[in-house]
Image (tube, rainbow, N blue to C red; front, side):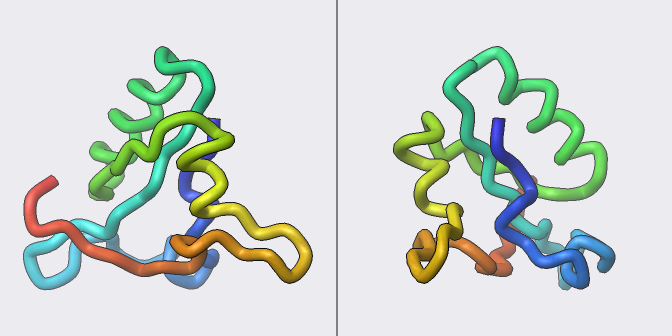
Length: 82
């Protein structure tokens, strides 16, 4: 299960609701059953969860390893409706 790790701590410490939108949190897991409770928690905290699929697919989009960074890492995105 991978979630919340694409945002830096300073961003996570701020209000996830900005100008009527909810900060997006990306979720990825090889266990589909693991995503639902984390998505529910994200919603309770005010975030808009976006499922990216399995770790080797969607997880790679938010992964940082050495000089190779996934295209979605450190993206601070918002969704108008949660």
